[in-house]
Image 1 (tube, rainbow, N blue to C red):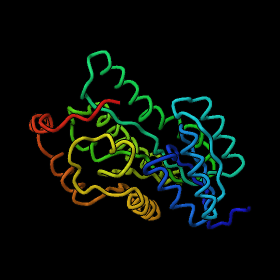
Image 2 (tube, rainbow, N blue to C red; image 1 turned 90 degrees about the vertical axis):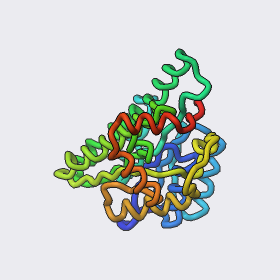
Image 3 (tube, rainbow, N blue to C red; image 1 turned 60 degrees about the vertical axis):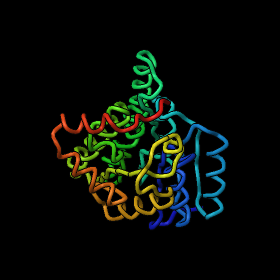
Length: 260
């Protein structure tokens, strides 16, 4: 099937569940060409089948975003066959301090950073040079509302997502000269395998398909930050303006996120 000019070649990492799955299904309905990665073969295969049933052409691969060389080889191959228009670096993991000792705590922090930070760089690296040469393309970084304030109950997750927000905003200015658009996505509590482990109240909890619509619309408009739901975003930005000592004191009283 040939891809018309109106169709996009879209990479989505972490596409086997949650927001990644919802994004794949959303873009599939417009018959875009999807390039999907995930780590669970059964779940990813199901997503591929559903996307194909909606009329999309799909290439998929079971691959860990931490596997730099394997991911690079595959994404470069995909880009050579169908030049990539949009990369959504969605793959990520979450874990907090609840139920961990010192050794587990440090190992978990390293694992979260490997996926949430290095995994994003591994995803971007094989594609960015090609986009620069073409002077076109779009990149979306998956951050979080947790990036707006220190969260003692999930320090690695919150700080890794803060890194993604700052990286995305910084690269937007750096890559503009090459015609590359960059957006940062900051979801609140969205239905996913990550939030399913939370044992505390989640205000303004939304379904994953709601998130997919918000993200797609934001990317179409080339928004700097795609943050939702608005009440959660407004509250996060507001408390983020408080002094660090106050924030740390307040957030230390919140429930800790469960371990990986």
